[in-house]
Image (tube, rainbow over all chains, first blue to last red; front, top):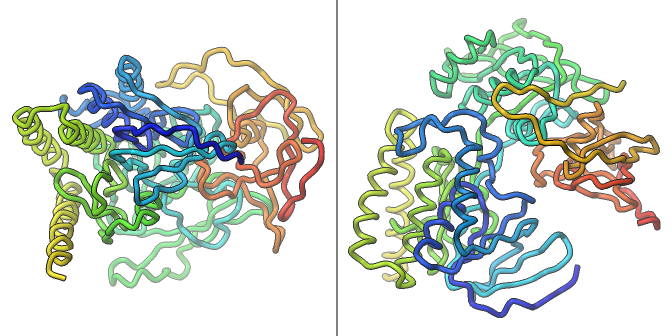
Length: 381
Length: 109
């Protein structure tokens, strides 16, 4: 590693993470004239948008009916017309209290940049699930399998078992089937399917069984997965105990874990942001105000880092953050901003309708009220 | 056991544009990969799933998170141990070896 202190300039906005939230924020801010530096650890921008081959939900204005990777293509096209600097293969190592962002470029050079504003849009990570044999090659995250087949066009296995019937589990099962993998089944610990009915019906029509009240107890194999043992669990008494004698051994070479996502909040912790645990949003999330500003002035958050939702929500939040920062820097008139602010909040509320959305909406309100509470507390001390 | 796990004729995605084939040397054996793809994807395409053995119990490990976080897929690449293969692109003539334990540096990098 080589230390190179080259960048003395004071960037108006440094965005960490070039996924749906980061890209949308960059576009919105740069459109108003903000000088944006966008960094991402991957060798291509777009985050998980390019792994998503399914059509998005919601209304037309939320890009419903368009496939994730097409949305990504469009965003990148829009961005190329704007004055945005993108650094790829660049890992944000940490942020000093003077908003000095340190980053590692291509595993070789350490550089830094002083930012007036920072947007953390690092997204989320898959949650692992531990069971006997879970470390065997062939057991992987559902998102890991999705990247391998949809980005690199390599089939991660030929006979797959999916653990978890949330939207990711259902969607990836269908995509595995599309890619030519034999999906033997989706198992779900709870008595009901966790994801949207639309996805569940689609994979049932594709002939993939969904077994509820089932869990995995073992992945078997000498040097990689050769079979999986699943067991029915007692969900009726809510004890979740294994039901003896209900074990089924399934021959497979791929076990995908779709046990949910958690906000990827390492930089929040490092910077000492105020956090709170909200189960409906995937775990610890940074507290923020209604303008997405965290407990550290000038540091904003958008997308899954503030609670795991969907790409459409992440894009709306990104747009909001971009506008807020443009407004704060004086690129946008108050009247114009207020109109936008009202409109975007309505769009966000619309996206959080339905039985899944309500829990998230509650979680989001909790973030806001906790943030305000923490301010009051600080003032009173 | 050499199988091809490459996906062609996908119902939604167009086939990838003509990519440059490169030679890689995996544990002394010559295999083919496409320039720019991660080492792990190239190995899975060739049916290789065991990428390393753990230091303490010599257990096999492969790709788990596929995004450079879990470090389960580390291997020895061009003499350098502990390289995350899911986010490191293959290059022509790259020497890739199964990692045993903590691995050792070789001089040929």
